[in-house]
Amino acid sequence: MVDSTKKKRTKALTDTMEDYLEAIFDLAEQKKAVRVKDIAGKMDVRMPTVTSMLKTLSERGLVNYERYEYVELTKRGIVIGREMRRKHDALRQFLTDILKVDDETADVEACKMEHALGSETLDRIRDFMSFIHTCPRTGESWLERFDEYRRNGMNMEACREQAEAFFYDLRQCFDVDETPLKKDPPAEHGATRVATRTKKDTAALTKNGARRGGRAPGTAVKTP
Image (cartoon, rainbow, N blue to C red; front, side, top):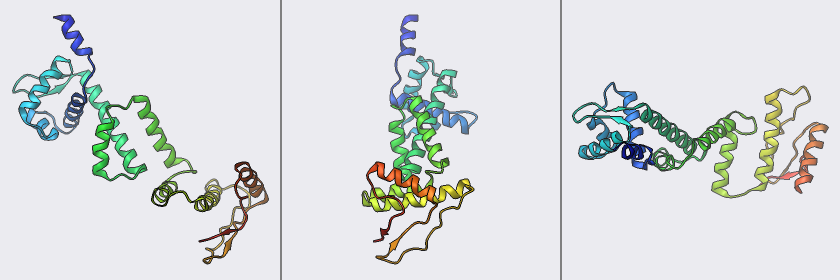
């Protein structure tokens, strides 16, 4: 009997079990007492279905539940429920803030993805989101370019212009004690535009451009 109980408690959880633990965790954060009807409403299922699952989770040592009583997560159940919520929130934020997926779709997709995502990968996603919102090379402007890329495909001219604009903004951000780049006024349609920069800036960018086999920065660019 002891061996049978131990096997049940160490057996891998199903996606549905994890969803229930997450739901109970969320409800416990909002209410002093969680009832079967609360879980049924959140999961959008019938109460007998919840009762059956609670029995299974109780056998796994994840909830404390007696019929007609309140539902409580055990310490292990709290750990799992909290982790599932953490995964869901991080994935949802990544989908909405970075990939610009609509809220409703992101919520559904995050619910599907969270079950397969490991904690280390989750931490990397969270760090990545923090990085692109704080590193001067990235941020909102960069994400807007991603939207443009998805709509119109690769546009090397736009990439070069964005790189020049970034270089200017970066120098202003760090307030470098050298003559900063000067933004020229917008060029007329079909005219040429040259970004003004210091000799040191030009040399560095020319070297990088040559290494990539592209146009040397600072040379004339024809606007559409």
